[in-house]
Amino acid sequence: MHVALLGSEQDPQIQHIAQALRQIAIPFYIANTRYFGISWTISYDPDFDDGLIHFSSSSLCDQPRVTFSNTKAAYWHEYLPGFSRDNKSESGGKEEEAQGRRASVLVNDGWVEQERASTLLCWFSYADIKWVNPIDAVRSHQCKPYQSRIAGKLGAHIPYTFVGNAPEVATQFCSNMREVIYKPVRGGRTAQFVNKQPNMRPLLNNLLSERPVTFQKYIAGVNIRSYVLGNDVLSVQIDSSELDYRNDDNASVSVTLVPRDVQQLAVKICKALGMHWCAIDWRKSAKGKYFFLEANPSPYFLKVENDTGLDITEKLVALLVRT
Image 1 (cartoon, rainbow, N blue to C red):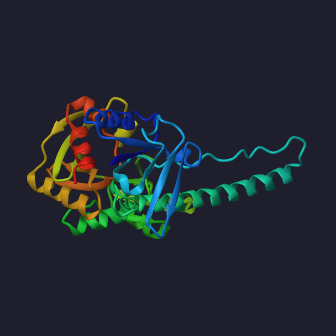
Image 2 (tube, rainbow, N blue to C red):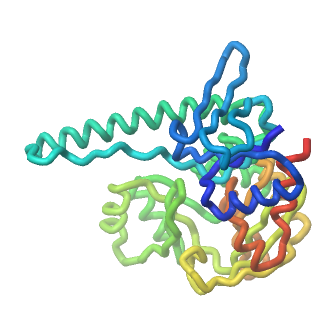
């Protein structure tokens, strides 16, 4: 039985998990979705509800092919879209014709990527594979308001939040808060402070005409990250002078203990979101109250492990190999 590693074979975290599996003699294969259709392919038979993953290189797997049913577990680190086809215009073509060809290529590339994703879904949704984490959990992270709703129902403290692109509501929300931050609804960019002005409406009209935004009351305090692995919770404090520590190359990480009830809540949130493991980001206020920010289903952990000595890898590998 193999363990699948979803991500780039060049990624340090994938390489690290691969080495840990080698040390305990667990066979594995690496599936980089960027090269799906190039270095590896899929054949699936709905009648038998099983499929094969075919590899063109022994560096990806010790076998030329592995069945879905012989894949014990899969570690979801990163989904990478396929390469876009060359959209350069032919020399000598008219500009309007070149623009038309580029538009056609973009439409084609979008359709091809959808076909690739739909085929991969046969594998991602195969019931006998223990995905760590499953695709539904990954998708839940793409809608952080959904995560907040689930966590709030379980008893987590949630910062006052507005999500949307209605400027009149956003103006009222920002006016009622002393300090407000804004960040993407899906994620992918760091949080920023709202530049509060006497008349916020024109600024918000301009911002929200481009895209919806998450506005949130700023919670003064410290950053806590809890790695939840099954029923185990390992927590660190991240000290930074920046609003969002991801912007701070000098941010420092140290092991910390969180209260028992917060640990139990973290495990409940992880399970309620359909995850086997995750990293939960909290904001701990000056009064010691923990505010839930998000639960990441495929967090980076290698630097934290190296900086603190926490053995996240051992617990993560145990989730992959134990029944």
